[in-house]
Image (cartoon, rainbow, N blue to C red; front, top):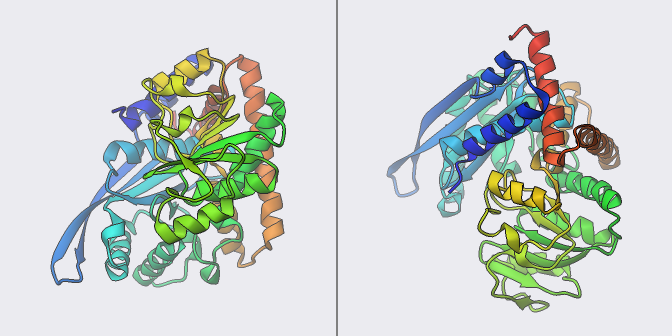
Length: 411
């Protein structure tokens, strides 16, 4: 299996060949500025105490406070958290918001915890990391298997520990305690703006067909948004399998089915197919929206799509990426495609700092401006260097990080 942080460093090395970063800057970007590992003892409902491992990686803060989600997942590991913190650094730079990159995680299958155990774990994580985080130092957010409710518990625990209200310490909170409009579906909405721009470049019509791997928060919201805007969703998958309807799935009915049964499988308005991976489905657009490293050298040649949009973090291994490049398949990289989440997190921080909150249409307008400009900035870099969108995005991000590091005298 591909090591996530090795993948992140290879991407960094590839872009360095293109733009020739200052040697001191390149050396500093080989590791996080700080990495914390904590043990989190949690009293379980049966009276026993179970200890969980948690992490926080603070990769780079030259452009602003560290920023990045906290995931609860059994496969969380040091390499993954470091890689995700690096990708967050590039992501915030690509969309040109004044933040750096960080990431956190806890090794746990949270689906096996009761609500009480989950809350005690969330509060225990904050007890372990609270001295490192803050609205002006490091701002966590939701990620895989964390949500606004968990963010609310975490913010409350932080405020208890420091003794003051600091709503800006965490984003992705419930609206009632300082969350932002649009945040619930911001990753999907940002991805839609990027897909729309990419489709224009490729000449794809509105009725283009779409296959989505991963039907969680981002994937399901994006399916709805795309369908409302004239795209045809013909295949979706989750961890249990894939469903297909070449005439188009009814996304809202699929969502209801998954809420009732826990999976997209056995949805009546579809057929279930026995192909190894969602990428093998014939569709104009393929959207990986699950976990990293799902597209590898072993399965990449199954892809039939003209456009791939990385809503997941790091879904394509470097080896697979090289093959896609040789096949001239247009890939919108994760650090651009899924940056809508961190863009609205930034807008949430701004609202928290003001103590003044915007309407949904105002947030949508600001998000659209951010994502459209980011796409055009990356496109210009791609054309300037005659390269891929990924390397164009990295070139843009790394140059912005380098400029900030030089301005601070960190060389």
